[in-house]
Amino acid sequence: MREERERELNLFIEQWAETPEKNREIFSHFRKYLSEKEGVTLDFISRPGLTYSLRAVHAHQKVRGLFVMVDVIEDVTRWLSICFYSEMITDPEEKGDFVPGGLLGEDAICFDIEARNDSLIQYLECRMDEACLDAARK
Image 1 (cartoon, rainbow, N blue to C red):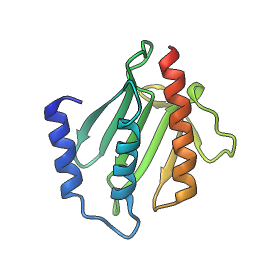
Image 2: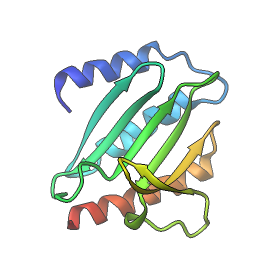
Image 3: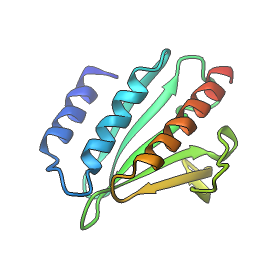
Image 4: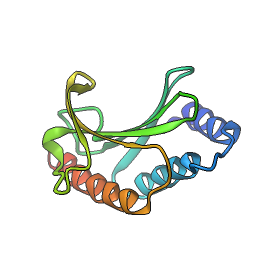
């Protein structure tokens, strides 16, 4: 991640007051999880009042500019939407929502997290692993 974006992301997290839903903690967890993957770089896109997007791309990825987007959605309470290109992952437990054109104009499967749910976090880590492997091959 470029230094300027890294600073912006760190400031965003520092200024985000944690709530009982623990969405700040979950966002930070996914940031760490993705940043530790070999060949993966992160980018941060801030659209204050709308969304704050953490985007992961694999170094070997050529077709698309990311393989997962972790969005912080501004609402009464901030919540997370984690989106993947639909053909890059499976959703064996059908926990996600199919969203036509939902990820940069392409079909997506998105998972919403409104409060800490450890089983969903683990499920999403598996989807992140799956998408990362797919991205490394394309």
